[in-house]
Amino acid sequence: MKFGPTPTKDAIGAILAHSTRLPGRVIKKGTLLSAEDVAQLLNADIESVTAASMEDGDVSENDAAARVTNALIGENTRTGAAFTGRCNLVSEAHGVLCFDVDKLNALNAVSESITVATLAPYEVVTPGQMIATIKIIPFAVSGAELNAALDCARAAALTIMVAPFKARKTGLILTRLPGMKESILDNTVKTANARIETYGSTIDHIIRCDHNQEAVAGAIAQLVAKECELLFIFGASAVVDRQDVLPAAVVDAGGQVVHFGMPVDPGNLLFIGSIAGRPVVGMPGCARSPKLNGFDWVLWRLLAGLQVSANEITQMGSGGLLKEISERGQKRSGEKDAPLKADGSETQISALILAAGSSRRMGAENKLLADIDGKPMVRHVTEAVAAANIRSITVVTGHEPELIEAALSGIDATFVHNPDFSIGLSTSLRVGAAAIGGDVDGVIICLGDMPMVSSADIDQLIRAFDPVEGRSICVPVAGRKRGNPVLWAHPYLAEMAEISGDVGARH
Image (cartoon, rainbow, N blue to C red; front, side, top):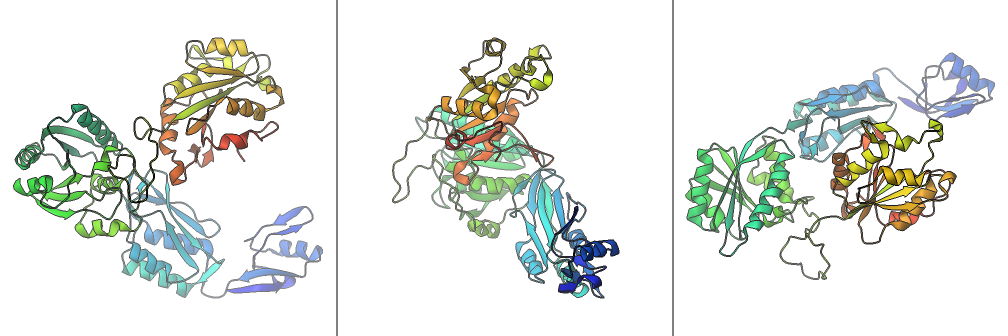
């Protein structure tokens, strides 16, 4: 491919490298210049353009991107049409992303013109989620470069696929020490079950027993007899050695310990073994928390039917330093005391419902009071918020405030009035932000005219919220289009107070 300044009169059939503005139109970057395009450029006194001209054997960017993508496509993935040299791979299943990192690196080293970017290996993905993008950097690549990349992918049998989660019969063993409260075990069961149900399986059998080798070995035998496919053991005391109670019980029951410990923190004290062809996992203490930890990395693979070997465990150290979890028993050297929330993990979220608008496009009718299935529209929204994991609700009123408050009677909410509602949305944001206390972690801002938003939608946003991990603004997306409600970390409220006019906080 030839690239560079090209006399405009000779540019018919060349690819324009940079968008060019003409009187009445713009010829966009990537346009294959026609005779008419060239004539208009010359009429505008543009004597030279930067362009790319394909040579014999060159392959266009879209064709090359599609061919590389088709060579990589694996089970439970699909590809879209190539556009501007880019072609995406999309998941068709809820499962775990699988590919060989070394093979991918080898492919990306073939040519600087051909690139493949993916999500991290073994990441959980959902149907419709983009998992890889194949991008051809220039407007065309030589056939030799493309063939070298395709040969590399084929020779290495490199595919990008999704291993789907499958419903698996699982068993959980919980051990207890003298004086231990059953409520601790109850909470552990809730957390473990919530974790496993997320991926389509359930805990079918639960055994509570004393924290001794004989009792645990007997419990393991019972779960094997019940044909559990996966066995999980949560000990009353942390496992500190391969010969400790829980791993020793696996061996006593006729199994083996494949690996003890993992280079993931939190999660160091996990062990994995097998018995009668079934994986056995000794859960680390941090698994009492719903927060991400090393146990999740093992659980995802097992629920997707993937093997977890000792070698795979030892390779988890890259990226294995996860955030601190409050359930960890000891602080690290140099850590300062920090206040913990009452439940050790819950994030405190308040809701702000904007219900001040005058619904001018609806004429005389107040849209927020429109009857939907026997209830005012705004009540549908507020009831959904109240049913979610929300600490408090603040409703901003403006137009017909008495009617709005009456429509929401019986709901535990605080009402604040915005006398300047007619000026625009920003005024309601300012009034609402000022009414929210400073003792919450985040605020979910809801519009009063979205009756189909459910409490499950709101809880999903809350689960995604984690400022420590960089998720301080959580936005719902449908069909790649952003929507509402939006969850904001509390510090952003101060910035919202500076907004003016009939605009929200989108920018």
